[in-house]
Every structure is written in C-alpha cells, then in structure tokens.
Length: 132
Image (tube, helix red, strand yellow):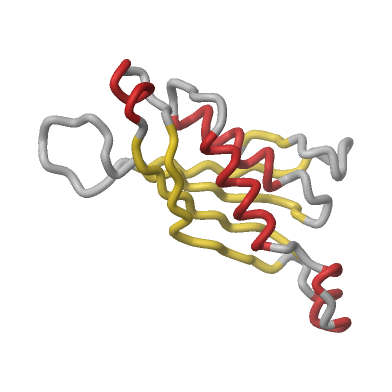
C-alpha cells in the first residue's frame, strides 16, 4: 500500500533551455513533487527516520535543478525523478516542472511537464526508474 506525499511550488533558479540567453541568464523553475510512500511505519513510530525527510529531499531537488544545465525540461524532470527514487521507500514519483518564464512571445500562464516514474523491481533503492 502506498500513500501520497506531495511538496508543491519549490522555486529554483536554473540555466536550462535551448537558447543561449536561457543558459547565460537563467530563469525560475517551479517544481511539484508527489511521492508514493507507505507512511504506516512513520505513523506508528512517530520517527522521522521511518519516512521520507521532505526537507532534505527539497534541498537535493533544488541542487539538481541548479547544477549542470540541460536543453529540455524533459531531461530536467527525469533527473529530478531519479533524485526522488534514491530513497528506497519511494515506490513511485510524479514530478511536474513549471517553466513560467519560458521564452514565448505570446502571453501565457505557464509551461509545465509532468512525468511519473516507478522504481524498477530489480533495483530497489538504486534510484532507477521505469518510464510511464
């Protein structure tokens, strides 16, 4: 059985994009995470060690966004999903990358990509994922 733990609206600064000015100047990215986790052990023990430390996870996700620029938000979302799956308790993750300041000439509200990745049955705790 899995429950869903979400952290929404993580604001990061990254230098991702296909255009030179995106790489040079950087821009804001907003990340939403959902994690499939069995929270029963933590509920029973009331101990942080029995669940996903979402504070530490947010730090790790922020670092993943801020390092090594990539061209596509698809690549960035997959990187973030890999970070989420490093914790063996996470069975699946849904990652949304918002790029609200994308270089589009028309007025728009947001650009976002949502991906879902599951832990591979052969590699628990290794952060590997199956595409969905």
